[in-house]
Image 1 (tube, rainbow, N blue to C red):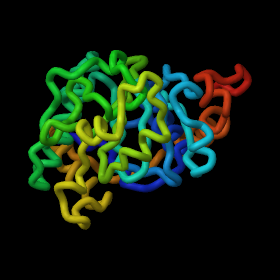
Image 2: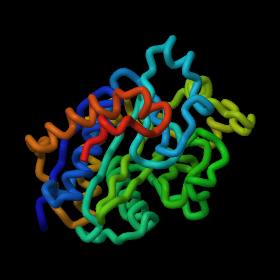
Image 3: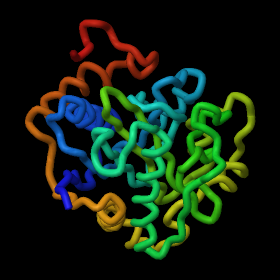
Length: 278
């Protein structure tokens, strides 16, 4: 078994979370960083929007301002996610590592199997969505309103939403595993322009681990340990606990100040040329 890196659970702001994920992603592109599994939370609560989404159309900016909900644009695609009571994972690797292939869906399937294996250690019977819509065809702004293909379901309801980006033979996939879910708050923060999504339809489409597990078993540190075991079992690797390298730390700081706290990036998905990092 080969050793890969685990960065253990810790909470960060939305902006720092995205900067960390991208710094590791860029390090893997350069061949300087190992395949990395990271677990994290969000403090304060936040909305992350997909790379191609229109923030002003799909997020209630005034509600977020009044309720101290941060808004950040992800480097990955997909739909908007309200991040509060959840465990977030990211997995970053070169395509050629382990069982991974150049295909987006193939990567989704492998990672979903890892998470499902981890959840089985908690006695949960999860499965992958076989007939879900491709993410770009989901007809609402809400990530959790419909399952995309190979995302994770419990009792037919979506419990984990994920998104991915790929470049230079490297992929970054991160996703939200719900510990609790407030349909009213999610619907208030993320707009549904066409009226397709209601509190009732969200409750019917979404589930969360707290509905099945005792409170102590949804503790993020405990849960991330079970998920780590699932990744190790499916991938046939050993994850060794580590931290960002000095190079990743430096790049994270540059991405944080030059990109992720930049209002133009979060509104429009672009930043001034002088702020771009080569």
